[in-house]
Image (cartoon, rainbow, N blue to C red; front, side, top):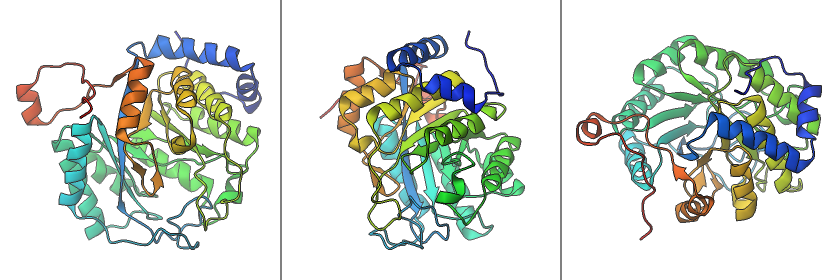
Length: 339
């Protein structure tokens, strides 16, 4: 059984990351098959429920009010529109529905109450519910838990030493405080980061150290490749090489054996072969649908073909609506057939 450690040092992580590529993949694959023998992929859909106008200055983000991009501020979606999108996602094969609001932090009031209603509605559809809303207070995390929230996404983005080069409007500790509040409320943690921000390999390994030091490890670890958006400060950076992403996924799998390692943003620029290698090296979850908040993602048909070609199956839903529970026996959920 793969050992669960929370005391990895950057030098140890760097040594794993820099192994000869095939040796690294072999090691990660062995851990993956030991801890996740069903060879399933969780399909997750992400919807922006409040877009643009964010006061944070995250250098990679087209939703920041600090930059001139094609993303415009939009009013918060109505609950019924979100639930309609969640229903479509469920019917297409997703088992987790994630809702993102471009906020610095959650404010009590009508908008937050609307999010709570969204969470309750998504749960009633038989989906896992996840939100990413910025920084949280203790009582807000508890309110989300009482609404039925399964997971809260709050990425660390990069290592602590490079963080101020990317974001100046909040601190690394702000991020960690929110994760602690989420955990204390009994909500599972979804936290990962982005590579390709101009950081060093040691910065990447430092981010993985922070994630693997959390007790318990995050249940979900998204590994994103920078999507270079015109108008943001990072638009001219070079693309992330496919093997860079494979190395990060394989290293994350070794450090956090039981976590869902999520192949996330940046897939639209990856070849099918590169994505298959990421799945082989330890990724067992993808964001599913043509858009991730405001950036492009492969279409559902493309992803169905990818999963089929890999010989994998879509993960069965872990929760059911009362109506589903009454009429359906437990079974592995199959991907919907293509029209």
